[in-house]
Length: 445
Ligand code: NAD
Image 1: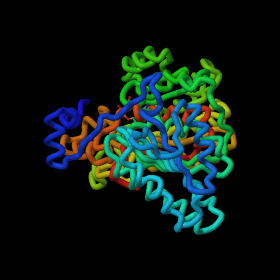
Image 2: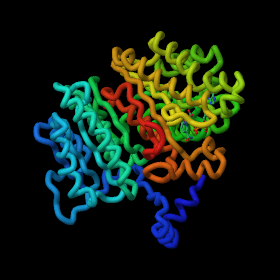
Image 3: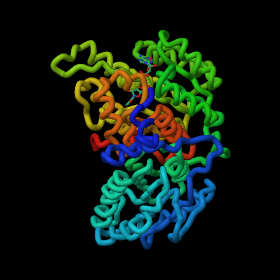
C-alpha cells in the first residue's frame, strides 16, 4: 500500500508546503541491503566515568566495521552517538548525559542512531544508582521524539556479567535493520551467546517455523529468516495454500497447511518437524486475526476466534513442542504482540486481551526457556503497512501513520528484522523482552 502523503512529502513542492505549515515530515528510512555499511558515518562513543560497557561496545562496533571516534570532531556527521551511562551512580551525575549529547546531537546524520547503555535498575548497588539508571529511560525516549530525519534512540540495559552478550543487539540497533524500532528499552542478561561465524547468514543450519507465513508480516519473516540462512517451514491455513507455496519457493523452504486452532494442530506440527527435520530451532507465532467490535457488541464467537488464534493455540503449540523436546536446546520462541496489547485500542477488547496475553506468555515462559539455553521474546508492531491496516477507515489510517516519531507506517520487513535479531544465536542473553516496532508511536507506555 503506498503512503501518498509520504510520497508528497518527499517531493520538492511537498517539502515546501510541509515546512510552511509545520506538518509531520516523514523521512525516507534507510533499510538494510546486503553488503551495505552498518551506519552512514562514524559512531562517536562516550562514557560516564567508571562505565563498564564502552570498552566491550567498541569491540563489537569495530568487529562490525563501524568506525569509532572517542572525541567529537568539527564538521563530522555521525552515523551514531553511543553513550555508556553504566558509570552513573546517582541522580547528580545524570548531567553527564547532557554534557555528552548536547554539543553533538545536531551533527547526527539522517537515519542516525542514539544509543544509551546502562545497568538494569534493579542491579544498582544503592537506591541512588537504581533511580539514576531508571531515569535513563525518560532521557532516551525524549531524545527519540526530538530526532528528525529518520533518527532513532534506544536504551540497552546490560546486566552485570552480560557484557559479552551485546554483539547481536548492538549490530541490530546500529544498522538499517532497526529502521522502525524507536524509543525502546532492551534488556540483555545472562545466556550463552554464540557469535555466528558469518554475520550475513547467522541462522545457517537452523530450522524456523513461521505461522501465518503466506502474506503480510509472516511472509516478510519467512524471507528474512531465509535470507539469514534458516530452513523455513511456512505454515498457514489451507485456504492460503497458493500464497504459502509462493513464499516457500522464494526462500527454498517447505509448506505446512494447518489451522493452528485445530485441536490436532500441535501434534501435527510436532510430527511434521520431527519427521522432516528432527526438531526445530526457531518458532515464530505470527498468525493473528482481528474481529473488531466495541465490547457492547462483542459476540462470544468474535471473542473466542481472536483469543483462539492469537493466544490459546500458541500456548498449546508451545506446550507440545517443549514437553516433547522438539524445540532444540538453545531454541527460540518469538511472539507477535501489538501496541494494542500495551495501550489498548477502541473496538479491540478481544484483540488487546489476546496480545497482552502474548506478553504474559513471554514473561512466564522466559525462565523455562532460559533453563534450556533458549529464549522467548515478542515484537509488538505498531502501524505496519499490510492488508490488516489497509482495512482501517481512511482517516483513522492516516492518523495512525502520522502518530509516531517517524511520522509513517512501518513495513513488514521491519518487524521481520527484529524477529531475526531475536533468533540470532548471539542473542542468547536477550530473553523476556517485548520490543515495539512502532516508530515510537505516541500511544501507550
Ligand atoms: P495478515 O492477516 O496479513 O496475516 C495473518 C496470517 O495469519 C494470514 O496469512 C492468515 O491466513 C494466518 N492465520 C490466521 N488464522 C490462522 C490459523 N488459525 N492458523 C494458521 N494461520 C492463520 O496479518 P499481518 O498484518 O501480516 O499480521 C501478522 C501479525 O502481526 C498478526 O499477529 C497481527 O496481529 C500482528 N500485528 C500486525 C499489525 C499491523 O499493523 N499489520 C500491528 C500489530 C500486530
